Length: 310
Image (cartoon, rainbow, N blue to C red; front, top):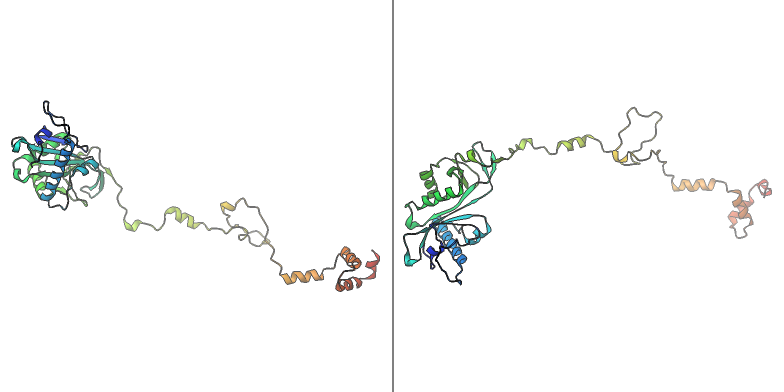
């Protein structure tokens, strides 16, 4: 892939490693570039064009590699340039390989869930004009040495048929462990995991799920007592052999007797009418000229013996 700027001067090494900052590598001594040229912008242009070419080759709807994605993720991209061909004296790009560590939940041979964080192959592209010339193997081998991993320790994100054939041909990776996500791992992946994979507890069968917990079942065995005074029963001559349990929240309440029933209003008025008046009240009624005739009649009808006392 050719670019309008000097790729050979921008990327001094045959394979350049770029991280999320996309900073230009150290320049060779004696190389000068005008200060107005933005080197980081040139690197971002290379990354964007490589991502578009890879998406087109894999028939993807959108690129999965771009400068903005690189800056928002802690991924590493290995860029391979052509040192022999110098079209217009500016150099050319052969391909790239993007890797990064990701936290995954994968299944092992026994279909147990494992939480791991392996190095993942996220994107791999070699220009169509220079394929089958050993450039892909050169780039892949350089990455393995730089990252210090073995091929069977890798997890590949949505590998294309070409990539699977490439791994089988050069690294004997053929037997895969079936997964439910888009990542592919090969036999021997769990044999060299450092640190060891954290295994999740097995999923409980639906038949073992209860509608409530054991603590709820113990709570339901204890009868809930209504509050005072609804919990007071009429006193009996002999106390029961086993008194009913009281709630802990009402244990400090005072012990009170049963409530008396309410007296109807008519019966209360009848009892007041039948009750004889107090002697002092009779005296006041007798001496009060403004008393009602009924009160005077009631006072005059009293026995004489009572009147003589006052």
